[in-house]
Length: 373
Figure 1 (tube, one colour):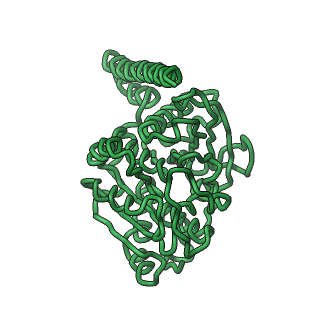
Figure 2: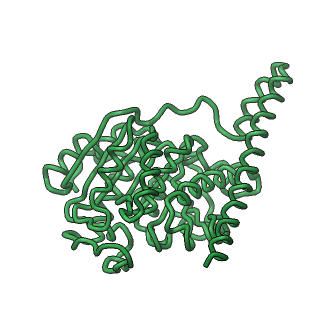
Figure 3: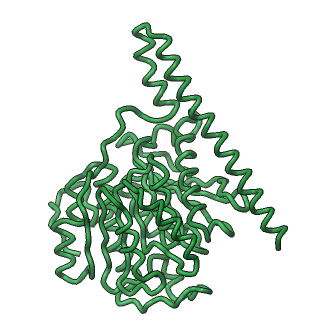
């Protein structure tokens, strides 16, 4: 893709970023059957497992990645590696069984992932402590995971950007998706949807979801010649999933579709989470119009809104409350400082109780389903 970005621009989304990639994996509760593996990739001093974090920018925004139906999170290395090299932390989880079939569970798991990242940032023994920006989270999803990401943005105001790649919609589950539509109509988060022109698995779903988002910044880009399954890795291009229509034949290679998607996704994240306003031109401004005119895109739609959203005045969570309480304590307002900390701790305890109840409910539901079989 041609670009009018200045040659020396350090944040060009159309070029690979400067950071190395460190990774860690750990057990993570995803609902349904229980625990599975999650992976966090982060800017590091060199590429590798548990590589030392690169702290040159202090802390980084985080992206939570929801996979498509019956796919593993490693199928999205093409995207996650690209954005990590541009200065983002990426949290990916491996779906199990019913998790991969339910947009509601994806929405819940995205919220759980944000909680986990905040816990990591509170843990003084964790090597990633201090690396996570507590006011900058994005939900990203592919196919069914894209529907889950939009649903998460409707429920969780900590999410400051939402990105759907070919967001899925199953016409055979009309009642389920009617309820999802109701929730998505409350989304006020900056939204980008990327679809393929030749998508035959969920045709029209991207525009459908875009139209549901009622207010705020939103954009839709459709890649000429792109299809649905090429948002996965190349090994899955010709797989026909049971119960789904066969996808349209692509007019571009998977590498081309990935490269185009990465530019728009990174430009959007830069504008929404880092405040690099000039990158928005690549999403729905002059750069995007040029791509539409040259045939790189087959459709382009957008509505203006705040980008980025105004950031909170104070950091979130117990650590943030502790930071806010220090000035009050120093000035002699011990009662005020104690109240600030008590409120934050109460919220945290309530969150843990909520998560425990949610986990018990998920296990109970799964047991009941298996007994019914």
